[in-house]
Image (cartoon, rainbow, N blue to C red; front, side, top):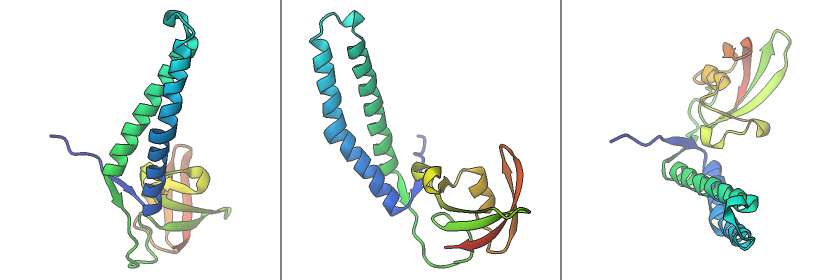
Length: 158
């Protein structure tokens, strides 16, 4: 029997997934069923693009519900125990500067389930996070990115 994948995430990340799941089950699912009913009333289903579109959306919504249920069921909550406060670990926010030009960047390292680069949350599976995990403040780290190698110095870990 294959083991289920564990999804590391913060408590806030799990709550966000639970809210999305609730919305999909209580609101979105009903909207899609209603769209299918309306499209059926248009007649011939073989040439009914509204019906096809609604069925595709239904498949997407049901797939997302299944994915979210699996992620929530297999969530492993990241807890900050306060130890190693200057070491980069999952759930911490790290600020670093690119060397030599000094561009400063700040990211929270989270599990892949709640990663959102636009909100400054990067996955622990990303090249930057993989390179930074386990490192300490003032360490210089070489990060392998798809765009090439990048050197950074860690300024702070919170």
